[in-house]
Image (cartoon, rainbow, N blue to C red):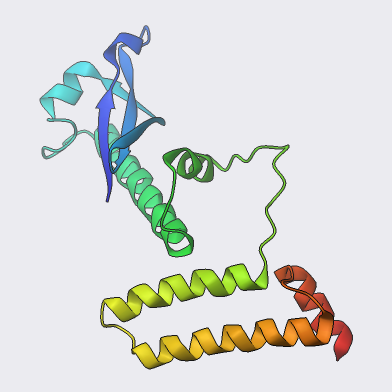
Length: 173
């Protein structure tokens, strides 16, 4: 479960007394720290109980709203990524939130059988939790077997990239 705690670094306070607000994001037994881009004075942070008390100043209300939006976006991105893969690293989540990708990193192509394997894992969890029927899972497993046989017979391939498969279908029609 993703947990977010906001805190200030008062030792990094500027000349105006504003200290930056950071987010500590923890998942299982690992954590990362991210800057939120917001700042507040240490006195107001303590007086408002880390912006949890009823706020009267408009600036504090705006900061609290921005932190809530930050947390919501973080949880939304985590949920989207967990749908694709249950093993998410916090560094990957940080890069996704910041919109940064490594320039030398080539996007990994995925094959048809990898897609079907991920779907099988996802569907198996649904069957184990009682959301789906075991017979449906067997049908998906059979469909994968049929696809493997078809690719072997028709194209003499063990597996194919998903993008290439789309091009082959377009050319066949």
